[in-house]
Length: 143
Image (spheres, rainbow, N blue to C red):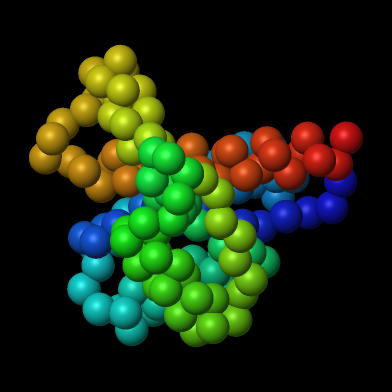
């Protein structure tokens, strides 16, 4: 299997959860949470991770509506993702991220690590779930 270096992003209005994967493409790990301030600052912070990890691809969670349509928030994420792809000169792939934040909160609560004051941890774990889903789908398609 070829080496893969991808970043998973959970893009929100206030924060961006960021996850990375090992070179084998087996395991996603939460890396950081970016507190959003402006697009240039978002790019600058992500650019550092892209260079450090030699990223080849961005996997971005797309918040489809529960009926499977692309709503207002998903369109905002797509617009941001396209700008980010251009700025970082990286391809993007989307993955359905419905309920990943709920899944992340549930997991953290079960681990007794959830705090409503630490939303960054939820965003980082949601990004990890997004990237892991993509890695699992990618691996399944290669079999």
